[in-house]
Image 1 (cartoon, rainbow, N blue to C red):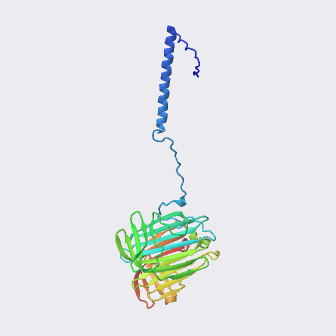
Image 2: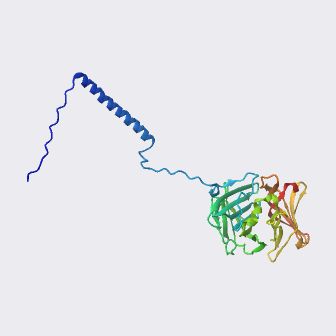
Length: 373
């Protein structure tokens, strides 16, 4: 069957323009072409500024705002500043604190105080890491705070390593922790922190201490050191809320080693009688390697001898054994006018029961209301 074709009308002839109409049409066509070039030029500039050649279909994600509690920034303390930041101490929540004190046996006596606190919040824990380092001349303070998922200690730009089993006896020196400060890399080791001493067992908190010998390494320089370790924990953090109110308490905290190997410890705390969650206590410990004496100790005093302040501790349960520590290298960690929070370390003297004096080194921290100094 033959194919069908549709007949189309022949194209109409193009009309011939008269001279004036030809000239006008020419100008119109040229103007349209010029406008087209200008449009393309402007479009190219706009797209070029947008960088479309390398960012086609690229999605720009806004930078999230990081809450200060999640920041791992290392904070440098000024000479006077608040010791404890504003952290919630909530009821029925955990509080844990691990603290090391390391002091080199050789001169210049370098001292490191490292504390790692974990305070349970509503949905996580706040870890507050702080260091107080004395290089033999001056004190340097650093801290960092972060939100963590559990009470396990987490490393950060300040705390590089941490060994949880610090109190296990090892045949060789066992690393305990390492720190990175702007001017120094610090680490310390021990295999001698095996004797546990209970110094506090209150409904609100429990505290154990250990002491022994080890090494302190500053950069590549390693020296023998005395090492103290304490662990405090509570299942009701609100019982320890007084830590954020040091202007309401009088506190004494000392550890001292004499050259004969005897260790002296004091944990003395007095709170206002009107506050039930700040219990008063006074614990003294003397450990000479063969026996441990633990019982309440007499209150300490601050005296001035020949313009040099001396921190005095008398253990009246041990026939008036005493420790005298000159406050030569001290740091006031308080930025308030109502109280002083003093940290000091250095050489001192222990007076034995028979009156014999033995030199040694130690660290002391005390809180005093300014009007009582």
